[in-house]
View (spheres, rainbow, N blue to C red):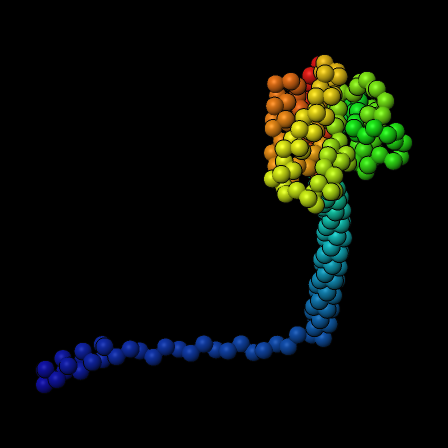
Length: 278
């Protein structure tokens, strides 16, 4: 019993005592005038907020517009500067290219013209030499011959540009005055047609050699001291010893056997005569 009482006492001590519930206050509704004032204040707040929002948006839009304007001005100025600089660079590049092209072209032209001038000067110097040389064209004919009746070889030499080209023949005694003396044995008959028909080439050789030697001896002693002798002859296969022996009697001589060869030999002899006179 005693234990039972003690247990009941402990249970009674551990059980909480019930708390008293708060008494709710009665709701008092606000008066109509208070509600109206509250509503007005809320509306005024909304209006102020809307006004501030509009003002802020307008300021933002203005700032954006100003930014676009400023950006447009900056881009325009930058573009103008870029175009100007590009045009200037392009002009400078064109000028540099033009100057380089002109310089190179001038160099090429100067070189080409220089070469042509040098060649022309050489030609003129050669022609100047020819223009100072006298040529005597001698035919051993015994009958007088008019200048227009002289052979074509003489006509070619007469138009070559020598200082003078004199036609001479054996019909009269003449004095050689030329710097180059041409002895024409091609248009002079050394061997008659009858002899050619009767004699062989081997049989014709001795009289041909003799007749050439006779013609050479007739003019050798009459040559000017510084004259070049040109023998114009067509001996065929035969070699004329009298021409080979000229070196013992004449300082400068040459021979030719065709009109072209004769023209070249006479021109070359003119240079020799010019150098000899210097």
